[in-house]
Length: 365
Image 1 (cartoon, rainbow, N blue to C red):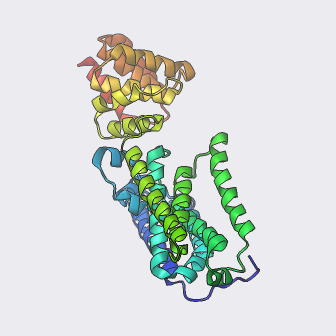
Image 2 (image 1 turned 180 degrees about the vertical axis):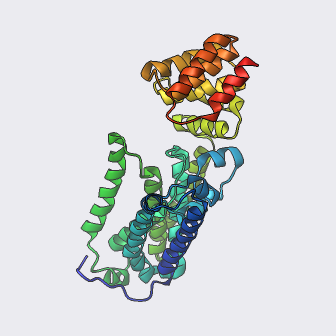
Image 3 (image 1 turned 135 degrees about the vertical axis):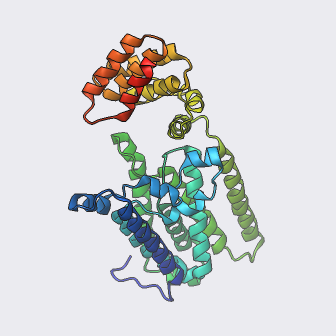
């Protein structure tokens, strides 16, 4: 782009989206502070850097795949794009929204701008659920990727008037920026960092480019009408396929992982056990959680004992693992062993854990 590119016309829809996301975040931030146990300088700094109240985000409409799979809360696909996890997250997304959104709105108008954002955001969220990439997703980035992809389509294949409007946009720099962030999204998980909803970004980008292709075509020739039909078929067919995959992506380990922990959180260990059994046995945290679910449900206790011992091989002094071991031993009728393991758990814990005392009392009973 040139140093000071300025599109013609107002950007009312883009500004409205930015204001909406900002108002939602500020309101949620105020509620989060009101719910906080303390408001010392360290607690405030924590909220400024990272929005820590995940329960609040979930209650306000974050994309939580488990709620879709269990409760059918598909409306979260629409609400998640207006929530953000931190001031930094909000600021970066809104800066990106303004950078590309004012250009697409200048050529397509406010209503198409809103349609482009919403379609891309919905498509990105749907792809994220289909890929089961994260237990909780928030942010406007899928919609922004769609707008940026739409801008690239317009710059490459737009009409003469559109090309004149976007003359100051560098196609190479725009494509390079999109490619860079897509590569970053693929690269971060390789180094153990999972902070970007990459499937959501790719899904939003693809939907945005397809929608922009429809906006760009003038339908004056048979060829243009055929291309429009193909793009429409791609959108509808892709959305249908992605929805079918998102409804039950049982081929993904994360599908079983998210459901297992959600059922545990809801006090439904008997429903968590089948999902834990679908997971590989190479993670001590998962092995312990599976063993605990079995102990709570009083099923397959011998199998639970095997799993918790696998976890303890990795971390023999872990209080949570020892608590699970003791609880399983109590369930097997090995009361003395169970009490001994629970006492070890209590001694190893860095803080008081009420569940350990409850297990000790219940073990005797």
